[in-house]
Image 1: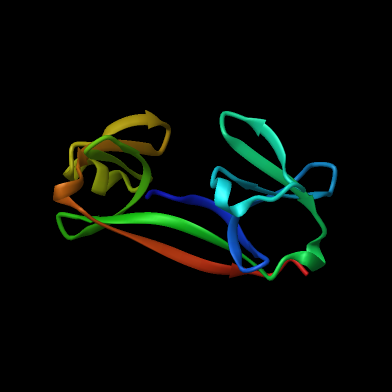
Image 2: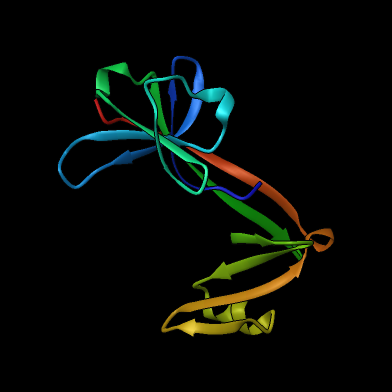
Amino acid sequence: MIRNDIYCRYKGKEYRFVHKADGTYEIVTKNKFNIDESFDFYQNEIYRKQVELDEIEDVYSINSFAVYKGEIFGVSRSIGPDVELYTSNIDLAKENRMNQIGKSEFIKVVSKSEVEVFEEKKQLNLK
């Protein structure tokens, strides 16, 4: 699974964590086993619940990366049997014949069999 977002633990379970523009907090999931009657159906099998920060056990970011030809790239998404790699390193992009999609943004779709995907988890302190 490719993940690049903020997550939290709430009552021992993992949810995507959203700090909304109005200052409130929300937990989000597609996993029906992680919800109870206090969750609202949002859309496309997504459920959400407004929570207070003191109800959250911990908050952390998770980002997906891949080792491709000995170099580390960000992974933006999974596309069937492939993954989309990205970098802002121009030399690395040229070396790996990546497509430029922005001023300093480069992507390349490669087979999952060509990479080793891993996640980096960083604790965040919001309290």
